[in-house]
Length: 277
Picture 1 (cartoon, one colour):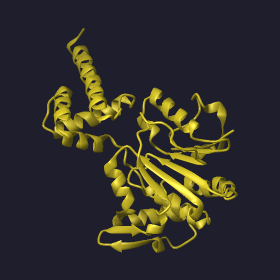
Picture 2 (cartoon, rainbow, N blue to C red):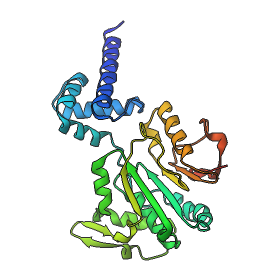
Picture 3 (cartoon, one colour):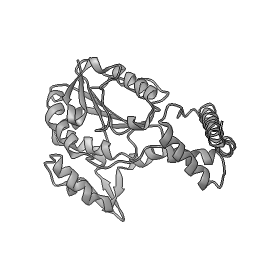
Picture 4 (cartoon, rainbow, N blue to C red):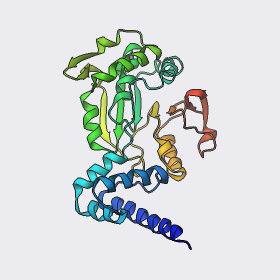
């Protein structure tokens, strides 16, 4: 075995022990995450903490909950935007909401909601379709800090110009500026949009199904998971959807080749929107 092979094997052992320590000490399970991305994020945290090994990071995390909080922020996937991928939101309006309009009550689960941009986007579409007052939106994430930010319904004002363009491209029917008020450097959205939203901590890697939903949105989250964890999460969503329930993934994600593929039909394949058959 070469020195490089030895170093790689040692790093792999340190990585496994670190993830096991995080799981057993704090209950967060990152053991099924895609290794390359995970390794980069862990080394970045080690560098920022002034540490020279993943074993050093493990010791720091076990004895310093503040370090764990900082690591959790590093590992949480918080890249998001309002009406991100406008084509998806346009398809949601044209191909999903019309059927749901016939239901007396609708439940939507936004899994991995991060700081809430997609939650507010969905709420706006539901209001414009006359459905928000009979919909309950469950917005979940494993990170309590990002959930706290999501509950505020406020976003950086500098991003609103891009969000406005996305909203128009997504088929918005009102003046986007009517939905928010400016407070300093923040755009604070109408609190009525979040009235039907339940925010809660939920870890896709370890937690189970908690309700039955008409729509489950989990977009651009599975790409960060390894194949076994992807399969686990997809089975979780499958358990949470009734017949004709809708599952929406990100554009780089698909049901093709998965264990639940044969139970779903594409609604809009290009936008990764599927319906349970």
